[in-house]
Length: 359
Image 1 (cartoon, rainbow, N blue to C red):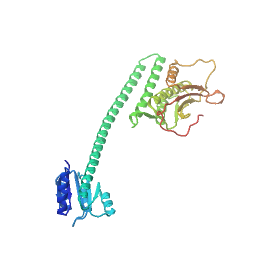
Image 2: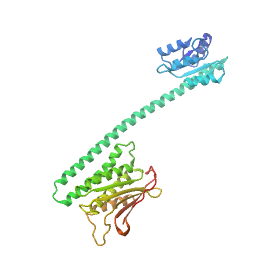
Image 3: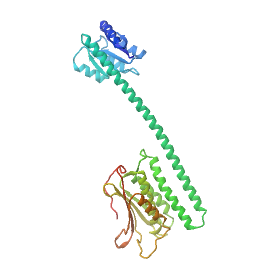
Image 4: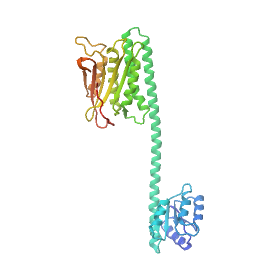
């Protein structure tokens, strides 16, 4: 049962309002002035307040302003005997939830009760919405905290695995075995880069490829550079946001191609540059390329390395229905460019930008 505070200086109107509203099931308290109504609001708890406009000393608008300053003020219905719309507009602007024009006869009391019911229903819906929004915010906060903890643990676990691999590599006398473990460590680091991007981002479904590839390029350049020769790995990527699983696949492929270029395109005492390029090719196809300025293909010379990287790239390409191409980067067969065209499904791509060109 709703408890109504009705503020009006007219004693006869107050009694009639109280009698008619109680018939409608309301509990009614009465105040003879705006000041008294404000005091009663501060002291008690009401579900709705009705304020008359014309009152001596402190009119309805002044009372409305004072009521709005009370903590936890309930909805307010403004009552006026004037049919001037400016008064109703002024009351609504001052914070009233609705208004009723006072008239003679039972229609006024019916309209008053009906308006009170509508305002109370809207207030109830508003409270329910606010409560639901608060619960949703609390749930989101819990989920975000849980996701942060999971990402943090995954990052720590990946770092621990890389450390174990590095320690194991130091104990092996075979250079090829150490090299294999080094590449394994770099592959794990490639996945860790994606996790780090997700961990520091508000979006866990997509990876910003420009930031990701720039970080990957910096890590690979530092890993392959030595005191005798520097490997400059540069990334040129359109600001595309790609679904996480596709980003991991592209990162793994970039890692393999960059590692091969750093190792085989230049001599042990020769500086060299390797470029990673990512761009959109067609409506929903991403093209990733890695190129160097080395000698390129040599006819009759067998491929170097174990071939594990090539098998990994072929497996990823088959899984994602991608096309892989190898070609010279420069006229005369100099340089090497490896490219993959990776198709994306609807919803796996977020952003576009002007295309970048190869050398």
